[in-house]
Image 1 (cartoon, one colour):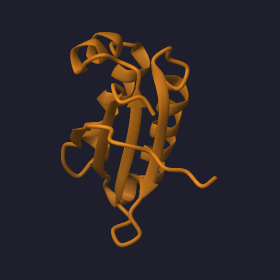
Image 2 (image 1 turned 180 degrees about the vertical axis):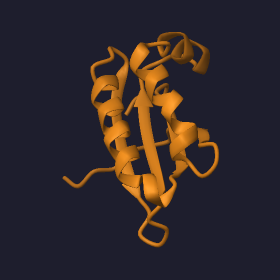
Image 3 (image 1 turned 90 degrees about the vertical axis):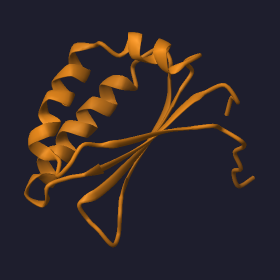
Length: 106
């Protein structure tokens, strides 16, 4: 993991009746964003206690949030973002994380 990677942690509270529709939309969006030149990785998780709570952990090789945002005006992003207001219980919560290290089983 590069220390200058841009890392996002995104929490999404999905309406219970919209979970499957949202999962389809987010998986399609992740598949498309994984084709982006600066994409590094994305992890999608569902909370075991609150099954309507999901998190995304995204790593991008972008120098700044501004650079990232300039590169994210793609039609697939706009389409996904337009769907969110109908699928989420409340606005998504995004945090930017500072990479400090990575450990993997050898």
